[in-house]
Length: 144
Length: 68
Image (cartoon, rainbow over all chains, first blue to last red; front, side, top):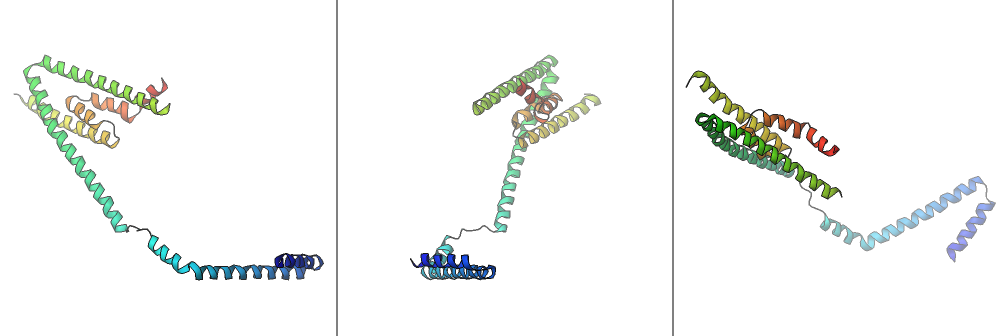
């Protein structure tokens, strides 16, 4: 009731008032609203402020430090590099065996060497063809 | 065994190993069957390089198969 009356009074005043009066009225309304908001905020702080700040402190996520992140990245890079060197060593060991065998076959019989080369070529083409078909079927499966 | 044979026996394995290593590393970086390319690169030269260039690096083969 009180607010409604105040509103009515303000409207009446606004209707009858000039520009300067209107402005001062607006200022009064704004200051009233601001004071009310401040009072509400203070009340809220008084009631829940301590609990909320304690809750905030407890809920604070553990932010990793830059040094820890850098260490993680360098550790991961080291792991990848070690894995690459292990794979390369395996490939070179395999390579020594394969190249040695191929050279021995070449020394033994040139026809067998030619047969081996042809078999390797045909095998590679067939394998590539199978891989391409498999990839195409997987793509089709995921896009439809 | 003459000098030429010895030179070939020294150069060819080195060439094959270099080719295979490059193919393996590049295919591994692109996750395109590194062991297949590495092993094929140990047996022949330069067909694996040409095939790798056509299929993996230039994308010619995949473009063709996509257009069909």
